[in-house]
Image 1: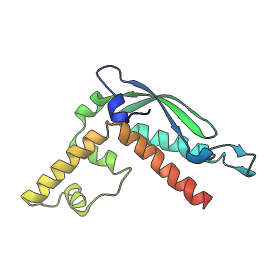
Image 2: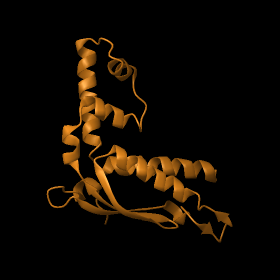
Image 3: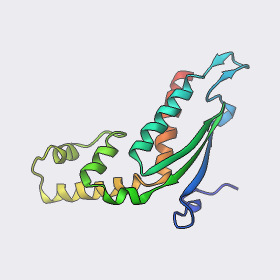
Image 4: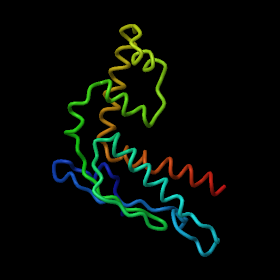
Length: 156
């Protein structure tokens, strides 16, 4: 029986992990599907580019990866110590490479004055983002979700 990633990852025991992610319903991720006659090789570039982007945003180092026809493997190292020196601005810049920001965050980054409630919201949001940028689960979400969306759109 599988267990949730949050119950398997223990940075104190080891920072190194071998992760696999498989397509549902035996769908093709990459390569040539002889049953349908479709060539999905171009999707390999989607995955490689996404891994490159995420490795520059998250406090996670990529050791190696292998992309197969219906799954991929990644060997990575969690490096939360890299994130200890990140300023609030750097956390925002990293997060906003992946996600759209809110109006309050736009105002904060533009240096506009904020009231105490808005500042508290900004600080709390940055703390959440900072934690997520060191989290394996968020890394995998940010890797898998866009790839799945693009593949599903293409297959529709």
